[in-house]
Length: 322
Image: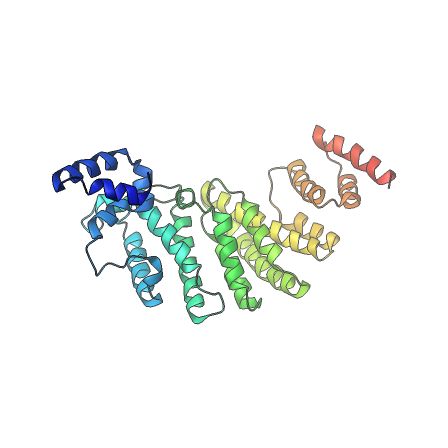
């Protein structure tokens, strides 16, 4: 029936009967729908005139206060373990808060003063969700999955906002610094680098990024000498290889294939030469740089895996038929 028909039917019943009907209907509502629609809050606050009924009524000042308090509670572990500050029912609903904040912050125009504040808070939420993938800050470590925005898409949104007006060294550096947050296990290392790389459209911008990434590679390479644990060694190696991937990709985008290959061979760290070659050959294949692929393959006396041998024959024929 239509809602007006529903209301007309309710008029037939007394208060006790209406409570019974409401209780019956409430039990039929799935838990997930109750949480997503905040039905409990609606029931509790329907007669409270001081409660804001919509997201749009919040000013930026109001939103900042809510976000500052939320982030402080996250830092203090109030959404991860029992405490008297955040009740159990609210701790389990953190994801709906983040979803709401994400939606509200993105409504502010990028180039406005409030938009700059919104970008700042998006960065803070991104960092907390990233840290939460490895350390229990919330009730789940699947933080990005819980809020329905994967880590790469969240990062892409921030990069677009940061680089919207000016792609100078300071703003590019901000974007690069966010590449070093803890990585969601469902994300490949290269995904966020690809977002940044595709956002840089001129060689001047790419050169700035290469300079900044190279500085980090040099810094981490020096740290490798003093490394004491396997985990630290693994983390540094992963970071060096990721930054090297970004630098090589930027060189390739500028058409400087040879320069990119030289940088790769100097800085990439892999378990063996064949594995190292497999990675760079895969990058060249994705970019359809088949001539360089053949040159790179021929320049090393390595026992290649079967798939690379097959690709060698395939690409040779492809080039011969051009």
